[in-house]
Image 1 (cartoon, rainbow, N blue to C red):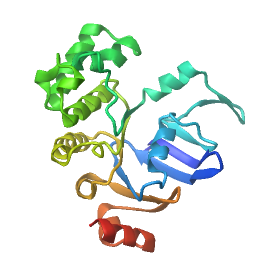
Image 2 (spheres, rainbow, N blue to C red; image 1 turned 180 degrees about the vertical axis):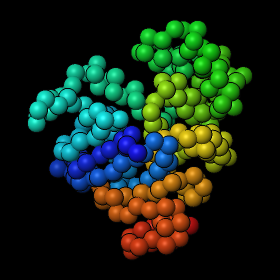
Image 3 (cartoon, one colour; image 1 turned 90 degrees about the horizontal axis):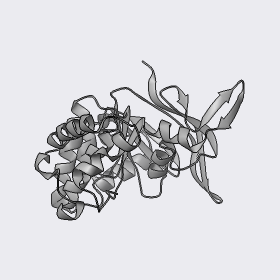
Image 4 (spheres, rainbow, N blue to C red; image 1 turned 45 degrees about the vertical axis):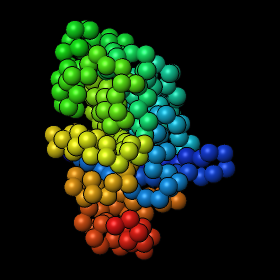
Length: 253
């Protein structure tokens, strides 16, 4: 089976700070991977490099057999223009800590903005698909609401629906529940569990260890800009090999 996303030798610096150090990684179609680790370990930057929100400094990312951000001619790589990067970015949906909904547009307008404005798909077709997505995230009655009228959990579920509306090949979640009040976390995780059960390819940066245990095919532990250990939920959460991982797991469980 081919990888949907593959990273090889990925390096990222912020000034002189070495954020990502020689990351090798791949995720297969339908796989759910949870990324855990201490704050500042490079988890969110890793996702942002995959989605080309940060330019990598060495190595490369491939998304469905395309090199992200570059075209290859012989043995040389040439940067893609912005419109081609935008096209590639559509293959990977991203849900952030903050919801980033357009405050002056309704829920429906938020969801169809990308499919209609970017992908140039028929408006009525996109509206029909958006209604199905709203049903899927449990907010069928909120199509005409504005973001300010919704709770944080509802806004995050709309953000998930908006990302799914672009029909991405994989979904990236960057700590999607960290900005929510504790009582709202469950409704967002419920939607994500349904996505995982339906075969959606997912990478999730999270501190929700219970969620990892329930849905992850693999868990990646990152620290100091490196992947320290990878394994199944049982391997990482119950019997980690690396002492750093053991200390982290014992502190959070």
